[in-house]
Length: 366
Image 1 (cartoon, one colour):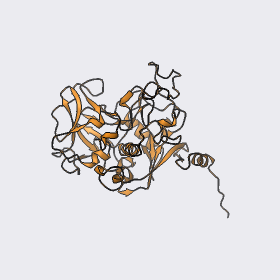
Image 2: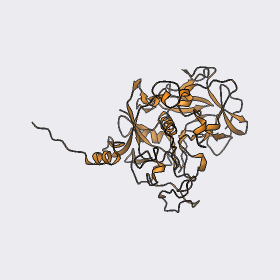
Image 3: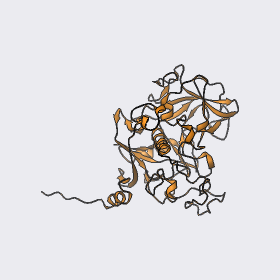
Image 4: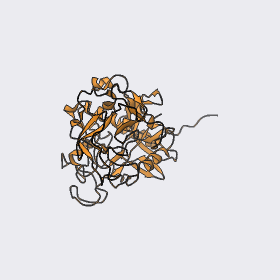
């Protein structure tokens, strides 16, 4: 009995047009999702301060992966699945667990782009000498105001009114991670992106080991046993609450710059559970300092939680609140200005928070 081969014309056209940088993956519901292929790389090839061996984003369930598939575009929840499509208004105004579940609904291997994956992309961009711009000023780049995208509300780029999300991929090549038309779009600005696999718990930095947050079987809940803290002395992953683990502190009780420490002296955020109440600390990630005498473990640099090579970083900012559970967003949004960028991280809000400037991006691993 002869077999019949039906060519996937959409996939073939995307791969041909992008020179193999992009492909189409199909969800459990049969929906196409445009993905960029990201080959694995070693930490030492980025910077010696990161350690050695493959970046943890490429280790999933104890298995080293040759590549990751990252959404070419910020995600839209369509028919209950989070997919990556060009020219659409990315989904926003939904909480962490909603985005996680929509990404997983797309089928085995699909997941919400994790903190480890964002860190890998940011480090790759920095090493390759290009950190993308994006929609950081109401439909245009704050750095290069002639660079614009199509606002979903029809507004004029730069007009400080309306909801200034831009349609996915509608900006120039400089809004893509590798400065080419087929790079990963909008990693800087437009909407902040939920990035599971990392959190603050009462100021303690906690992570899901390697890139296990990409697995459907990994429990990402507040009470999950998968969370691990980082021992300050050697970077080992240990049980949360262990003495001497890494924490984020602030330079003063009312905020200020962020300090990596093994203790908390300035507790921020007691007045509330979202970004609109209580104190927080912020500052450019490249300006983050460490407690006097501390030898910063390589793992926090590899995960984009402390600067590895501050000299070539932009002003991408970090925000934190060290009271309660705080889950990260990455990248910035349309009003972030110089705060936005591939290293930008926002650790002010709880997992239940939602806003028109916050969304997510699908990813896939085999």
